[in-house]
Amino acid sequence: MEMNLHATKLELIQWLATIDNPRIIEKILAIRNDEKEDWWEHLSALEKESINKGIDDADAGKLNDHGQARKLYGKWL
Image (cartoon, rainbow, N blue to C red; front, side, top):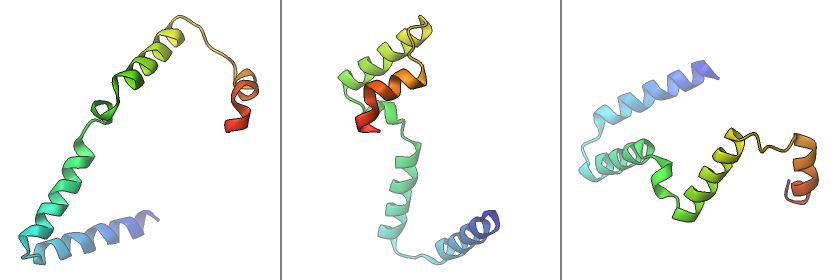
C-alpha cells in the first residue's frame, strides 16, 4: 500500500506540473487550505463546552469503564 501511495503522489505531482488552468489550481489550493484548518474552529459553542466538560471530568477521574459505557450507550454502538 505504501508503495502505491508513493507512486500515486508522484503521479499527482507530475500532473500538477502540467496544469495551466488557474481554476483547477485554485481548487487544489482550497483543498490544501481546508486540510490546514483546525476542526475546533468549526465546532459550535455547545460542542466545545461538551468536549471541555469531558476533559475536565476525565482529569478529575470521573470515568466509566468500557463495560459500563457499553451498557449505557450500547444501542448506539
